[in-house]
Length: 268
Image 1: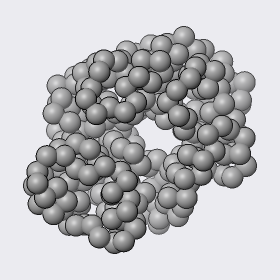
Image 2 (image 1 turned 45 degrees about the vertical axis):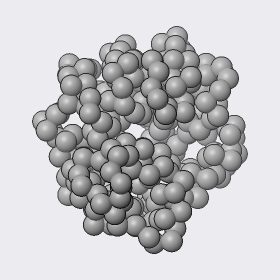
Image 3 (image 1 turned 90 degrees about the horizontal axis):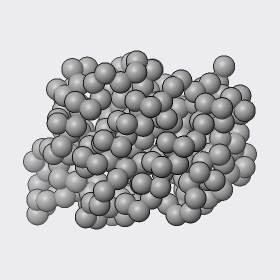
Image 4 (image 1 turned 60 degrees about the vertical axis):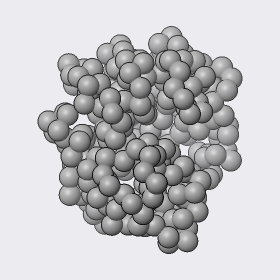
């Protein structure tokens, strides 16, 4: 039976976000957690993931934007501090103007940080703001997955045109699909699996409980929905207002019943 994966991104970005995500996982409201091993609170927050139900997958959310790196990156972060935002990173990747050796080292360091805290490789791997699909970075990312987590699957943030057309916020979904084109084939050449369909794009406003069911339209055999539940305030977090709304809706919704109505199995 086709299955549904509801993945909460940004674990370890802040303690309130981590606590919210861990609570949702324990209650069977989500079944995948994507972790930012680059964040200062990662090693501490990883303890929240111990004892989760066996079906909850724990993955690495490779982070190349907005946070301080784990490694020395004098070209990528010339003045120290935080890595660039997704827009300048996308522009630099399109021009082939990236310090790929530094980026490869940082990706490796984040895999090591995940393993150090969890004692194992991640179940899946994706990237913050989907930076893993960008030119140049894509190859480094897939090579790192093959080396550090050969059994993991990778997030493909594209989908079929018919599926995108059946949902709302098509512009965002089309943009993601455009940047991700060819990722599945590149992953397959390395023996890496991907989800077969993808949803979760919206404008981070409005009633999430009404929006979420639209993400279930036209699913594939391994349908992945990203979400960003959380709590608290964090400087520079552009979606801080949406996080508690998502969390509250996820706590209320009968996701297993909704999935079943769309021919999907939701392990919870």
